[in-house]
Structures are given as C-alpha cells and as structure tokens.
Amino acid sequence: MKRTLLYLILISLITINPRINGWNEASRMALTQSLVEEHNFKIDNSDFADTGDKVFVDGHFYSDKPPLPSIIAALVYWPLYQIGLRLSYGWNLAYYLIILFTIKLFWVFSVLAFKRALSYLEVKHRTIDILVPIFAFGSIMLTWSATFNNHSLAASSIMIAFMFYLKSKSEKSRKSIFASGFFFGLAGAMDIPTGIFFISFGLLLFDGWKISTKMLPYFIAGLIPLILHFWINYSIGHTLLPLQIVPEYFDYEGTIWRGGVQPSGMQPNSGWDSIKYGLSSLLGLRGFLLYNPLLFIAIPLLIKEGFSGQRLKRESRLLLVSVLVFLSYYFIYTTNYGGWSYSIRWFVPLLPFFMIYLIGVEDYLENRKIRISLGPIAVVSMIISSIGLINPWSNADYHSIPFMANVKQLIHLFF
Image (cartoon, rainbow, N blue to C red):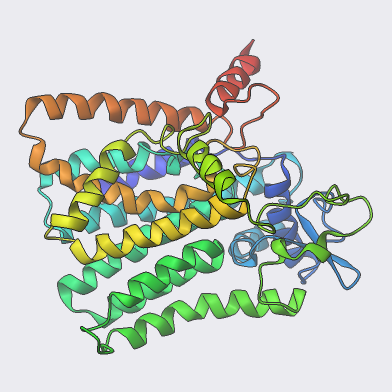
C-alpha cells in the first residue's frame, strides 16, 4: 500500500493542468477567491467575474455551480493567499496547489479505496495487481483529475463511499456505514444528479421490508453535506432548485443566454431527440463508451452479476436502475454534451461503479485468449485517458473530436 501511495503521489504531481481559461473553472475559482478574499459568496469583485457561468440574484453575481467544491478549494486557498500566492487567469501556482490538495488528493484516496474494495470482495492478489493500475489510469477519471471540477470529486467520493459500504458488509461496522453515507452524500452535494446513488444504496440497507439499524447512521451522515449544500443554495437563490436551472437568474445585461437561448437542464427534449442525443453521447464523436473502452467489458459483467452473480447481485440490480435514471436525466434535459470537454464529463462519476465489475474477468484470466485481449484494451484506454490530460476542456477550435483536438494542441505547443 505504501508503494502504491508513493507512485500515485508522484503521478499526481505531474498530471495537473493548472491553467484557468474556461467559464467552468473560472466560475468555481471565482467563488473560491471570493470566500477567501471577500468572505462572502458574491463574485462581483473576483478576477473571474467575467465568466458566463454565473447567475444574477438580488443585484449581485454568484457562481451557478454547487458551492461545496469551491468551499473545499477555499480551505486550501486560504493559507496560500496568506503567504502571497493569488489566483489569476493562465498558468497559476495557487491553482496547481488547489488541484493537488483537492482533486488529486481525492483521486489518490479513490484508487486506494478501489484496492481495499477488491480485498473485501475477496479478489485474488494477482487480479488486484492487474486491476488497480487499470482503475487508476484506464479511464477518463484520470483525465478529469487534472483540472478543478465537481465530477472528479464526486467520482472519487463515490468510490470511497462504495469501499466503506463493502467494509460495513464485511465487518458489520456502524462507523463504516456512517462513512459510506457521508461520502455518498458528499458526492450528491457536489454533483447533484449523483444523489441518486445516495438514495439507492440507502434502500439496500432495508432488512427485508424493515428499517435496519444501519439506516440511521447512513442517512444522518449523508444529510450533513446535502443540508449544507441546500442551505447555501437557498440562502443565495431562495430556492432548493440548482441555481443553474432557474431561467430568471440568467437574465442580466451582457449575458449570452438572452434571446431564447438557455443553459442545459431547463427544457426537456422530445422523446426521439433524447434517444438520438443519448446514443450520440455514448457512441458519437465524444462518446463516453468510446473514450472508456474498458466499459465494453465492465458493463456486460455488471449486467451478468445482476442476473446470476453471487457477490453483488442486489447491488448490481439497483445500480443498473440508478444508472439508467442518471443517464436518462442527461439524455432528456441536456443538449450540448457538457460544452468543451474531453468526452462527456457529466458521466465521470459512473466510472467507479463500472470499473469495480472488472473483478468478473478474474474467472477468465486463466484463459490465454481473454488475457491477451484484455491487455490491448487496457493499453488503449490508458492512452486515451493520458491524451485527455493535455486539456480536459478540449478546445473545439482545434478539432470537433476531443481526442484529435488534444493531439493537435500538443503538436501546436511544440511546433
């Protein structure tokens, strides 16, 4: 474990993209900067107040993003600001350190949690040695750990929560179920649609149709970050709805959202448009499955476990339903694939769930053909995720396909 930790720390140090140049990052850092330098949630005086990802409420501008990630970032930024390091646009040391001690720290813990989760599932040591690096580097979870965003934080929190859930099953520990509830709730507070998994894993705690003793610590823990989120959200916008789906808050002078154009999440698509958009989100030029090829192995194993498995049968069935609800929300209510991004950033929190089902390959590793085919797919996945590190917010001016855009940006950087 110590050697794994050392490797992860070293890799973390060299896989950070500390350049604030897009609306999404600017909006989050605007709140972080305002909390530390102005001691409030208003971003009017921030260096990043020109971001388009903001709302106008009661005469002031606020970030339209969930506040908890920026609050976590502010805990890191406060001592940095005290010693003279200040957030600003472009390449920035303060931003590098914020990513390192938030996004990367959570990512490192998620990899360690994945390794521990495999041990609770009684996976062989040989298989663990194969799957841990695949989890760490074989999906765009690695890509999105390079920049500040709520999807990476939510994904890492989900993996940690799932590990504690498995630990509570193995050891009958209330402390573990409390920790599981907290991290599932934290994921939901940082990335609202992932709250479905806090609810679904809570349902798994029913003892038949009876309320179990595990449910109280689980839900108390999970509600701590969720209540904090909704309290802040309500105090700013006078609503429990996410600020980014309240149309009137985007009606201000200079906004691009006037004239009938609205941010994603406000209006549902038609049934046929949702189907076409959903298929494109999974298999199109930015398709989530194409940018995470290992899912072509993991998802069938998840489905198989749900129907005929032994280790995670109940969890798999409820997880399949939850994932479908999660994806359906995005297919119905969004249209822009997450803006400029490497594949579909919204779906990153699903990756820990899918990747854990690669444990199913253990039964086939003795088969030479299976073993030989897994290796190339894992290598391709690692190459794709590594190319994403060049710029998780892929610049469409270079190319409409994010992978090609990043390659062209890399070539442009050196030639």
